[in-house]
Image (tube, rainbow, N blue to C red; front, side):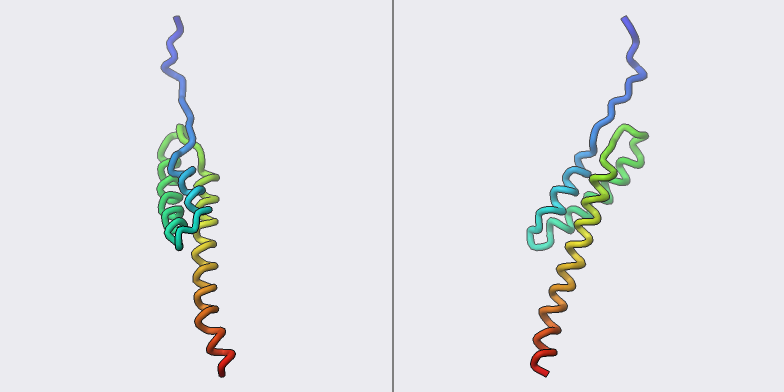
Length: 89
């Protein structure tokens, strides 16, 4: 019988998967905020895992989509406030 002590099990970070999923679910902005928090947590967890966890790309995608959604929402809110004032001037 062989000794399998050198076997390294690699799995995808659940936080990275959740980050991507939440980034795609708006939830009035809360999905994006949760995606950003989980994305940063996942990337740190993956970095510290000694290559036992994967999913850095998923976490990065969650971060990019999450931050993009927040920026777009902020720009939309600014447009909603400013455009009527410009039209009525």
